[in-house]
Picture (cartoon, rainbow, N blue to C red):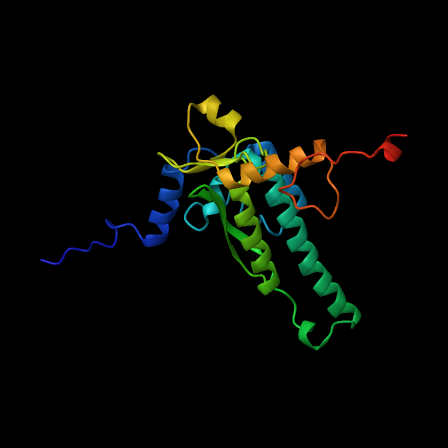
Length: 216
Protein backbone atom coordinates (compact mmCIF):
# COMPACT_ATOMS: atom_id res chain seq x y z
CA UNK A 1 0.00 0.00 0.00
CA UNK A 2 1.41 3.35 -1.06
CA UNK A 3 0.54 6.36 1.06
CA UNK A 4 0.88 9.84 -0.39
CA UNK A 5 2.35 12.03 2.35
CA UNK A 6 2.68 15.16 0.20
CA UNK A 7 -0.52 16.63 1.63
CA UNK A 8 0.26 15.61 5.22
CA UNK A 9 3.80 17.00 5.50
CA UNK A 10 4.00 20.80 5.18
CA UNK A 11 6.42 22.22 2.67
CA UNK A 12 9.56 23.89 4.13
CA UNK A 13 8.40 27.37 3.02
CA UNK A 14 5.04 26.95 4.77
CA UNK A 15 6.77 25.72 7.92
CA UNK A 16 9.08 28.74 7.88
CA UNK A 17 6.13 31.14 7.62
CA UNK A 18 4.29 29.45 10.48
CA UNK A 19 7.37 29.49 12.72
CA UNK A 20 7.89 33.19 12.15
CA UNK A 21 4.46 33.90 13.62
CA UNK A 22 4.49 31.44 16.49
CA UNK A 23 7.81 32.66 17.91
CA UNK A 24 7.41 36.40 17.32
CA UNK A 25 6.62 38.19 20.63
CA UNK A 26 5.47 41.42 19.00
CA UNK A 27 4.91 43.24 15.72
CA UNK A 28 5.46 46.82 14.69
CA UNK A 29 2.53 49.22 15.07
CA UNK A 30 0.21 49.22 12.05
CA UNK A 31 0.42 53.02 11.80
CA UNK A 32 4.19 52.81 11.36
CA UNK A 33 3.84 50.02 8.83
CA UNK A 34 1.37 52.17 6.88
CA UNK A 35 4.10 54.82 6.68
CA UNK A 36 6.42 52.31 5.03
CA UNK A 37 3.78 51.24 2.51
CA UNK A 38 3.03 54.85 1.59
CA UNK A 39 6.62 56.05 1.25
CA UNK A 40 8.31 52.88 -0.05
CA UNK A 41 5.62 50.98 -1.98
CA UNK A 42 8.14 49.12 -4.15
CA UNK A 43 10.17 47.82 -1.21
CA UNK A 44 7.08 46.82 0.79
CA UNK A 45 5.21 45.49 -2.23
CA UNK A 46 4.42 42.21 -0.46
CA UNK A 47 3.28 43.73 2.86
CA UNK A 48 0.13 41.88 4.05
CA UNK A 49 0.33 39.66 0.97
CA UNK A 50 -0.40 35.97 0.54
CA UNK A 51 0.67 34.00 3.62
CA UNK A 52 1.75 31.06 1.48
CA UNK A 53 4.13 33.21 -0.59
CA UNK A 54 5.74 35.81 1.68
CA UNK A 55 6.63 36.34 5.33
CA UNK A 56 5.69 40.00 4.91
CA UNK A 57 2.08 38.84 5.19
CA UNK A 58 2.42 39.42 8.94
CA UNK A 59 4.13 42.80 8.61
CA UNK A 60 7.35 43.75 10.39
CA UNK A 61 7.94 41.24 13.18
CA UNK A 62 9.91 43.55 15.46
CA UNK A 63 9.38 46.37 17.95
CA UNK A 64 8.61 50.03 17.20
CA UNK A 65 12.04 51.12 18.46
CA UNK A 66 13.67 50.14 15.18
CA UNK A 67 11.30 52.25 13.08
CA UNK A 68 13.75 55.08 12.33
CA UNK A 69 16.57 52.65 11.60
CA UNK A 70 14.47 50.78 9.04
CA UNK A 71 13.00 54.00 7.64
CA UNK A 72 16.44 55.47 6.96
CA UNK A 73 17.58 52.23 5.33
CA UNK A 74 14.58 52.15 2.98
CA UNK A 75 15.10 55.79 2.06
CA UNK A 76 18.75 55.18 1.13
CA UNK A 77 17.97 51.96 -0.75
CA UNK A 78 15.28 53.48 -2.97
CA UNK A 79 17.35 56.61 -3.58
CA UNK A 80 20.31 54.47 -4.67
CA UNK A 81 18.16 52.45 -7.09
CA UNK A 82 16.36 55.48 -8.53
CA UNK A 83 19.62 57.41 -8.95
CA UNK A 84 21.13 54.62 -11.06
CA UNK A 85 18.00 54.46 -13.22
CA UNK A 86 18.13 58.24 -13.71
CA UNK A 87 21.80 58.16 -14.78
CA UNK A 88 21.08 55.39 -17.28
CA UNK A 89 18.06 57.22 -18.71
CA UNK A 90 20.06 60.45 -19.20
CA UNK A 91 23.09 58.64 -20.61
CA UNK A 92 25.40 59.71 -17.79
CA UNK A 93 26.07 56.25 -16.39
CA UNK A 94 29.69 55.06 -16.33
CA UNK A 95 30.84 51.71 -17.71
CA UNK A 96 30.24 49.87 -14.42
CA UNK A 97 26.85 51.58 -13.91
CA UNK A 98 25.11 50.76 -17.19
CA UNK A 99 23.07 47.91 -15.71
CA UNK A 100 20.01 48.92 -13.64
CA UNK A 101 19.87 47.79 -10.01
CA UNK A 102 17.17 45.16 -9.45
CA UNK A 103 14.39 46.61 -7.31
CA UNK A 104 14.67 45.61 -3.67
CA UNK A 105 11.59 43.86 -2.29
CA UNK A 106 11.56 42.84 1.36
CA UNK A 107 10.72 39.17 1.93
CA UNK A 108 10.89 39.30 5.74
CA UNK A 109 11.67 41.86 8.43
CA UNK A 110 12.01 40.50 11.94
CA UNK A 111 13.93 40.40 15.21
CA UNK A 112 16.34 37.50 15.65
CA UNK A 113 18.74 36.97 18.56
CA UNK A 114 18.21 40.57 19.71
CA UNK A 115 18.97 42.18 16.34
CA UNK A 116 17.10 43.31 13.25
CA UNK A 117 17.09 40.80 10.40
CA UNK A 118 16.12 41.72 6.86
CA UNK A 119 15.65 39.23 4.03
CA UNK A 120 15.09 40.66 0.57
CA UNK A 121 15.30 40.14 -3.19
CA UNK A 122 17.18 42.39 -5.63
CA UNK A 123 19.74 45.06 -4.82
CA UNK A 124 23.54 45.13 -5.27
CA UNK A 125 26.69 45.01 -3.11
CA UNK A 126 26.20 48.60 -1.92
CA UNK A 127 22.70 47.82 -0.65
CA UNK A 128 23.91 44.59 0.92
CA UNK A 129 26.52 46.56 2.89
CA UNK A 130 23.87 49.04 4.09
CA UNK A 131 21.62 46.23 5.29
CA UNK A 132 24.50 44.60 7.20
CA UNK A 133 25.35 47.89 8.91
CA UNK A 134 21.74 48.52 9.95
CA UNK A 135 21.46 45.01 11.35
CA UNK A 136 24.61 45.55 13.44
CA UNK A 137 23.44 48.97 14.65
CA UNK A 138 20.18 47.46 15.92
CA UNK A 139 22.14 45.70 18.70
CA UNK A 140 22.67 49.11 20.37
CA UNK A 141 19.12 50.45 19.91
CA UNK A 142 16.27 49.54 22.25
CA UNK A 143 13.81 47.53 20.20
CA UNK A 144 10.89 48.79 22.27
CA UNK A 145 11.42 52.58 22.60
CA UNK A 146 14.32 53.37 20.23
CA UNK A 147 16.77 54.61 22.88
CA UNK A 148 20.29 54.68 21.46
CA UNK A 149 23.15 54.99 23.92
CA UNK A 150 25.73 53.00 25.87
CA UNK A 151 23.18 51.72 28.40
CA UNK A 152 21.28 49.56 25.90
CA UNK A 153 22.00 45.92 26.63
CA UNK A 154 20.87 42.41 25.77
CA UNK A 155 18.34 40.21 27.53
CA UNK A 156 20.11 36.84 27.44
CA UNK A 157 17.68 34.75 29.50
CA UNK A 158 14.59 33.60 27.66
CA UNK A 159 13.82 35.57 24.51
CA UNK A 160 16.98 37.46 23.50
CA UNK A 161 16.30 41.17 23.01
CA UNK A 162 18.13 44.50 22.88
CA UNK A 163 16.50 46.79 25.45
CA UNK A 164 17.27 49.87 27.52
CA UNK A 165 17.22 49.76 31.35
CA UNK A 166 13.81 51.50 31.52
CA UNK A 167 12.08 49.00 29.23
CA UNK A 168 13.75 46.09 31.02
CA UNK A 169 12.39 47.36 34.32
CA UNK A 170 8.92 47.74 32.80
CA UNK A 171 8.93 44.14 31.56
CA UNK A 172 10.65 42.73 34.64
CA UNK A 173 13.72 41.56 32.73
CA UNK A 174 17.46 41.88 33.28
CA UNK A 175 19.97 42.97 30.66
CA UNK A 176 23.66 42.34 30.20
CA UNK A 177 25.38 45.65 29.49
CA UNK A 178 28.79 46.32 27.97
CA UNK A 179 30.65 47.60 31.00
CA UNK A 180 33.70 48.76 29.05
CA UNK A 181 31.54 51.01 26.83
CA UNK A 182 29.69 52.45 29.84
CA UNK A 183 33.02 53.16 31.58
CA UNK A 184 34.35 54.83 28.42
CA UNK A 185 31.39 57.19 28.15
CA UNK A 186 31.60 58.05 31.84
CA UNK A 187 35.13 59.26 31.15
CA UNK A 188 33.91 61.25 28.16
CA UNK A 189 31.18 62.97 30.19
CA UNK A 190 33.56 63.64 33.02
CA UNK A 191 36.05 65.21 30.62
CA UNK A 192 33.34 67.58 29.39
CA UNK A 193 32.66 68.78 32.91
CA UNK A 194 36.38 69.17 33.63
CA UNK A 195 38.04 70.50 30.44
CA UNK A 196 41.57 69.26 29.79
CA UNK A 197 44.33 70.53 27.54
CA UNK A 198 44.39 69.07 24.06
CA UNK A 199 47.79 67.41 24.50
CA UNK A 200 46.70 65.48 27.58
CA UNK A 201 45.35 61.95 27.27
CA UNK A 202 41.69 61.07 27.84
CA UNK A 203 42.61 59.31 31.09
CA UNK A 204 44.10 62.51 32.54
CA UNK A 205 40.85 64.03 33.68
CA UNK A 206 42.22 66.41 36.32
CA UNK A 207 41.12 70.00 35.68
CA UNK A 208 43.89 72.28 34.45
CA UNK A 209 44.96 74.75 37.10
CA UNK A 210 44.92 78.32 35.91
CA UNK A 211 48.01 80.48 36.50
CA UNK A 212 47.79 83.85 38.23
CA UNK A 213 48.01 85.64 34.87
CA UNK A 214 45.14 83.54 33.43
CA UNK A 215 42.95 84.30 36.49
CA UNK A 216 43.41 88.04 35.94
